[in-house]
Image 1 (spheres, rainbow, N blue to C red):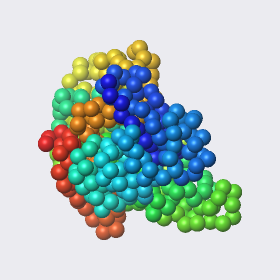
Image 2: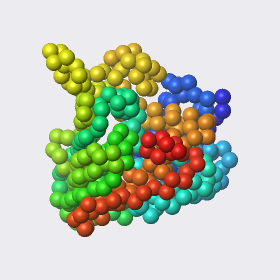
Image 3: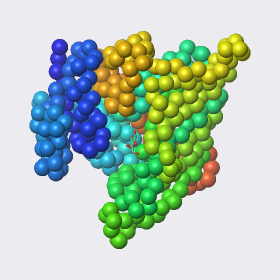
Image 4: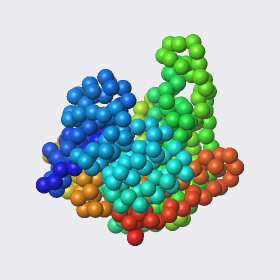
Length: 391
Ligand code: SOE
């Protein structure tokens, strides 16, 4: 069994989720290559040192460039705000490292293109952490769609709703700064449902959208009098047409009172429908039009059977899993991909495709017209091909 030396840049929410996944993955899944948690990296030495201890890393660095010089590090995991993804990921790829990058891939389409170029040139393994693809219920939805159980797909309807910034006194954190975050709800939450739509329905052909910033000024510090300007959207909504003819609606907001992490979609085809809600993530609701009328109707499938994707590694049927498992599953597939020399989807190419939709939505908001996302240059030889897996 080989060891993959891992370094993680960033140690807040995502840093914790990723660290937990590296700690757990080899304890539950049979792996050919196991992760060795070499170093975590952050600029505040006292904080990163304490985090290294509490999250189980062997050591720490305060400059990511140090990680790139180290021979004991094979994989660099970028879990920082969006404005640093491009610099760190490109440098890591140029140093010959494998790279996992948090979503969305970049803050602009230009950055995403350069990151994809760097990944293609490097020939190492690349992946974007769109973790919700690896919810077992989402994988089951994909299987049912691939088997044709829904027939021709006509509708995709997705919302990602949160309320954590509802209080106008919630301070002006980095997520409200376009320079740091790239965009607001659109890139933070909308990116997830775009990636799920790509995974489940296919490429998006064109979009038309609207965005709004309802709370334009926020205190610089909690409880402070001084305020600063919000430069990103609070909410975004757009219509889409898919290349396969399906229609799509997407809505992302952080101002939906009572909605904590409501990432939900419904898919309607000619033969049935599927419904998923992350807050009930062990379940998939399904309706099949050819069920007998007396006993038909929506059924709720508990996606906790050993034959369901990833589930066999965990608990007996009905013993549910949670948010953190989506990251463990991501790391499992990433480590397998490194072993096999194949970048697991979503690759940087898929990250570019998502970024192209975000970019098209923003352009459509300006132009008030239907807008086409730029096409991905299909060049990554380590990748899994187009969105349907075709090379
Ligand atoms: C905050 O809105 C956030 O943490 C996102 O940044 C994550 O990507 C999402 O999975 C949960 O919500």
